[in-house]
Image (cartoon, rainbow, N blue to C red; front, side, top):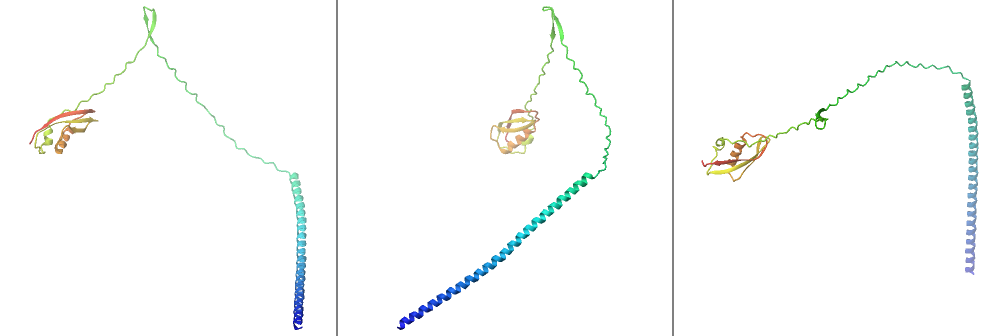
Length: 220
């Protein structure tokens, strides 16, 4: 009996909570609907104001267009009825320039050479005589090797020579200068230097290759 009563009480409490929750939710929904209606009403008012503003602006633009067209017509009528004064432009006088041209000089006639003619008794004709220019022979100058002299002693007098040397010195003459001196035997450097100085002291002219001097040096 107590359990049944307890269950009935719990059921009654649950039904009461459910009814309260449903009532609260319904009130919340009604409040939300009222707010939505109010906002829709406000937006409707704003949209109406925008529409009125657009209509007023369109009317204002049309009125300005008519005013501008009237002003343009007035200006056109004023220009057509206005008489312009004549405008005179002074053109400067250009001084006359006399142009004289000198005739080009005529080239002097070139006289053609006349050919001398000789009468030939056999053919009984006058045959022309042609002059043939002689070719000028170019004589090439030939150069010889420089002549040796007896001045070798002054170049080797200060050199100590321990034995006799007999050799041939060969050289070239290039642009009147002695060059490319060589010896057919091995010599001391001091003797080679002294003999080279002696050969370079000779008087040379032009160009000549393979000039030779036979030299014999005695022991001192």
